[in-house]
Image (cartoon, rainbow, N blue to C red; front, side, top):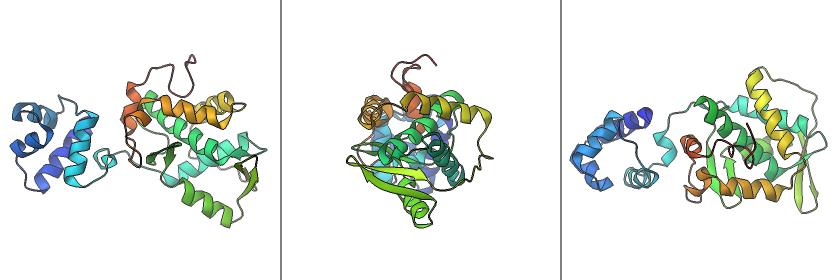
Length: 226
């Protein structure tokens, strides 16, 4: 939360607002707000929503995780190689989300750092659809309809994993293994049960830090021993 405290203080100062003003926006005392800027008092999701609305910025702007789009693409293809016969598009999106957030749970940094948006059908990376369209246009993946789903498979033998550590690949393997024979609806329902999805509104960026509040055995699969 110390990074959030710094961001809030920077936003307040850059707009010429007093601590009293921001305390009023949050509905707390000035003393309580000072503790927020000191990093000794956490902001609730509701308070972040108030600041997001007042400053006209998405909640994700309060979090300063670096993102690596190229690493996200390597995660994308790692999963496609695991599901070499193809994987439903929605299921792929959810596995990427689980990998990033589960890695954050253990290490306090995400695997790729891309931002995820809360959608009705579960969290999805903000670059997922654009990247999928681009890979399809360049002939790197196939997309075919099958049983009311769009199945994605890799068309390339490229095996570039240089940005993924052994621990990251191990986590991807565990997640893919658990969900391999599960229906897409099961993984969608699972992500709906998690705190990150529940604590955000539709269309809102999901802060990685929300996964920390999740049960340790409910991070990437329903109550499995990690």
